Length: 312
Image 1 (spheres, helix red, strand yellow):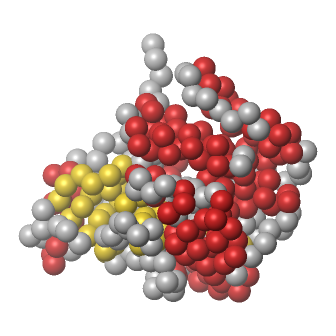
Image 2 (tube, one colour):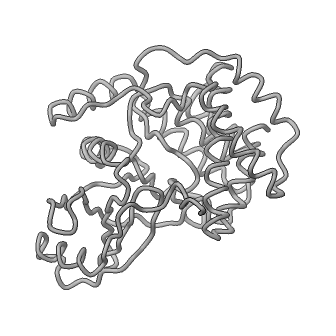
């Protein structure tokens, strides 16, 4: 018997029941239509009217991250030029929906994974994300947010997924890369050079900075002019090495766009760069497997290109 995919929901969110609960808990939204909007590994997103989206967890592994996400986003609301979700409607458990859920105003734009933007047109997005991450990674912000979420009874762990541990990431990536290659996906010849460097690195030490934690090409929204309109899905937010977020510089950008990113962010040392590149390969390989299985052909193609960018 074939095992279900690792991203399969543990719970099915009934849209009709969700609409009833939203209408009861937030009467000002009661007359708005509710429909399925998007889904990922851990959450189902429902659109409520044209202006609101609600996130519902459908895998138990995401529950600890959901508490951190809500606490951190409450602290970060309206802080950056790049918009992030602001939880304005926080639900309470109800029969049939006893896992956390919350609503935010819908951010405009499309995932960069589905934008169709060629590499040479991504300079504005790269520049905006470099500036955004420079601000997010400021040590003072980590101290402020840690204190604020602790007061809410939430603890920010240090790199709970070991994403800055390149040897750990490499071990996980190799299995996915082998499956992709077996399925006929062409991998860049220079990949071995990166994996050799990653295998030689010890994990970073220290608490690190405040992280988005899963900053890949589905979690950055852009408009047709490559302006960043949102950074979404903060379910993996934590403390850790900046390399965890810097993977976006190597998976989404290359050439002049990557140069623009680091003009805004600042320089990084070779070990941090290797960690970011290795994580970019792993996350893109994961995304490629998922998207190919779910027939999301545009996302799969972008993820495979991301692997090539990461070794460029």
